[in-house]
Length: 173
Image 1: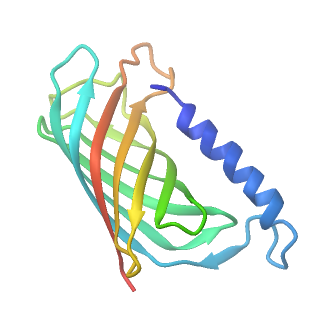
Image 2: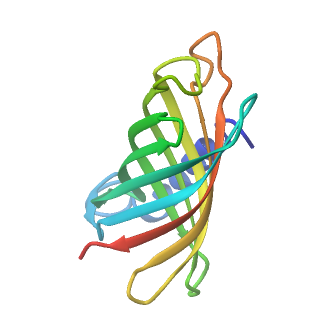
Image 3: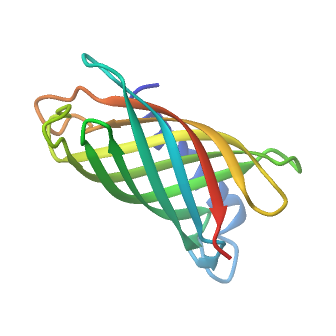
């Protein structure tokens, strides 16, 4: 699953949800609706192919609206070797029935700066992944996540990296 699988899964599930639950509304399939903005803080290990593992800190701000079933988010990560990624993209959350357990997929294109660290082949890098977590009644979320970053083959070299992390996400309202 170390490729664009999470992005494709998000698209398929989100489009199915959109068709079933959003297209028949007055706002249309990608109508804008309010949601709670969130700040996500994450710490984990970058698992680089052909290189050593390293720590990474990831911050994500989930914007205060959705378009159809898709949330929008801005992300920034910095690894201990100085590697920095910044991007903007979409999220798709699925609740496990009426339990506090949820899953969320994300897909975010962005810019990557190796800063003398691990070279991912070029400055345009896509981050996609999955998190599985628990949401408290007050909106606090804790989750384990796995994501993949690569350039999707747009450059000659495409080594890619994976990150395994623990997320804490707090509602901002």
